[in-house]
Length: 180
Image (tube, rainbow, N blue to C red; front, side):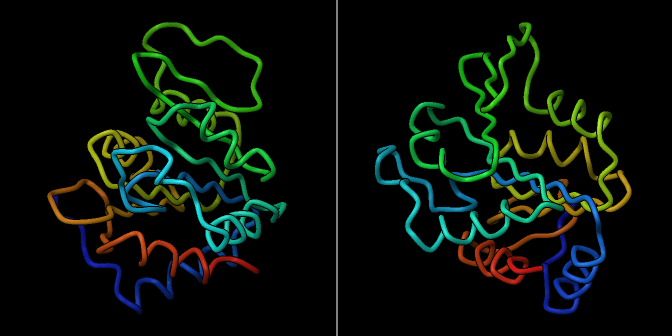
C-alpha cells in the first residue's frame, strides 16, 4: 500500500473532521516526526515553538495527546512534564506510559496500549503520525477505525493513508489544528 500525498484539499478535509469531532486522539511520534532525528538525544530537545504548539493542542479538553518515542522516558518527561499530554516510550522490550502507575507484562507494546485506549474510549477523530517501522504497526492498528487518519513522514513504502515530506509539514498541520 502506498500512502497518498496529504495535499491541501485532503488536509482541509482532515481539519474539518478534526473541528467537528468531540473526542480526539492524537498519537504523535517524536523523532523524525515532530523534530528531525538526532543521534545525540539532547539535540532533539523541542524548541519553544513546538512546546507552545503542543501546549495549545494538548490543553484542548476534547484532545487526548500522546507522544510516542523510543527515547529515554526520563529525558522526555523533563522536556514535556509541564504539558497536559502523555508519553509512551518503548525500549528494550519495556513500555512506559507517563502518568500511569502501572506495570505492563512482557509483550505489552505501543500497539496494544493504543488498542486498549481505543477499547476504553470512543474517539470520533484519531490521528497517528510517524516515520518508521514501529509507527507502521500503529497505522495497522487504527487505519480501519472510523474517524482515523494515518500519516507517514518521509519517503518509503507505508501502510499509512497519507504522507508528508518532513517534520516541518507536521508542524504546519498541528499549527492549523491548534485553537480548534
